[in-house]
Image (cartoon, rainbow, N blue to C red; front, side, top):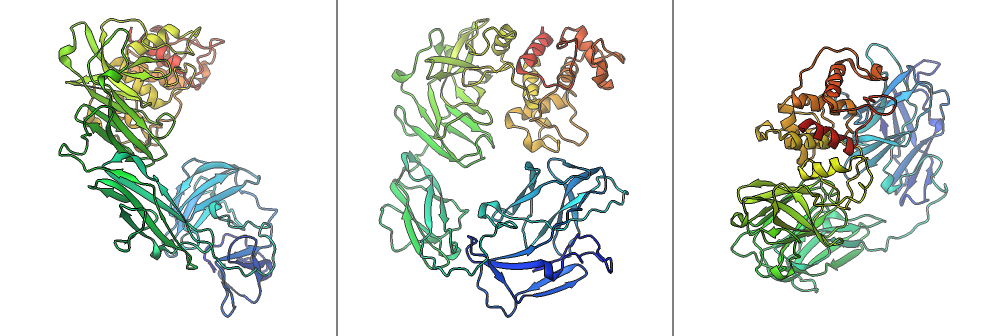
Length: 620
């Protein structure tokens, strides 16, 4: 083992770095199972040159899968040399230059205090999670313990200070395989000789489908807790019997998905595997009911009531799914962190619940998924409707059927020709209805708005399509608003001009902006309503502050800005100088009022109720 980068304090007598680590302070242990069988090794060699240490095991009769070097030394005098210290990432690949990059979450360490730093390496993905004082600070890439050396460097955060900070020992481990920590290595005695007689375990995801599929995509999880999987022995074959065939087997890796399409009937996925000790296992999935696609293409379902298509969506991925050019569902990337199966079925007319007042302009479609809970990001539902049934005093809207309350709930929609689309974070039964123009009665009733000061404003905003409620029947008026959410509300309220040519966005964190907010952010950027932060980011998930909300609204309305240098609020000193004139104009136009004690509270977050109220005032 070679430690090619030492950051140890210079030690007497020669004041050279690395002299703190001496052979007499080191112990070497080996293990075959990493399960309390660690054995102390004697007779290893030790060489050191310029701080580089080589520990040799040549000539020793050792059979082990794990090696641990333990230093019995504790530096109780270790401190930092400057008041502000920043955690940095260093990657060295032997003769390659050192690269310094900040963590995703900037982190400072207090002067003259001890801090707990942990790196959790994932040996499969090559990533490492960094924790400081048990708080997650981000993930570093290209983390390969033993091959690529990853260090935590402590830097003063400012050039030219000449600060010297030394690290005596950094322990890294993969928590998922429970590598030992110092002092927790179990009994230090001879390892018991045991033989691996356990075969690998095999599991399928998904494990069969009783719903007819055009294409099946399955991943097999093959695990072995002892000697490990023999990757060269992984084989699979699709067959129309639960009995494994003799021929047709193909090799695969654990990251592969085994797909099947262009077939009909019942099919089974068979897997064969072996571990490094020669134990073999064989298993098959439950049946997959397959059907050939018809001539209408990949989005055409079989005919008949309550039948339709199904699609598998991998964890974190998205896609667009449709049926007979009547319905289209777009799931954005990141809408679910679990794999799911999307199903769309067209209801028979006799099975469609009636609306008490509105006439229906389209068939009803049931859209479902096989996992519970709402989507993390809204999906877009697009439906074709019959314009000939629409009267002059009506407008088309999309509604979903609430199975609990047994009512249709409007979610609005944007009309494009014979289609209308709307965003939704729930999957349900959808249809297009003809809603009378000028209707002021709220289509939905939110269970948490009764007696709330924003009651009337919220229902008006919902009617105007500025904002929606949640699938659980609540509006959550006191919930904080993110920057992305407010920009979408602002774009809807002021009907900002859509311009897809403004995409893609150039923010450093553009990939973090949800798909449902991209166009609105682009509209606001083009209209100079937003500018982003000095570091080039937009920070879509950050909670919007009151000063940010007022600044965006005043810019969007293009209100004249004076040169005021003070406001009438008690906390005027906390209002940034650049924003004082914006606040004065917003107060003069009646857009905003102070909070308790005549405070403006510029840095406090804004709620959904406050955002709705300000936007309604802006368009009145």
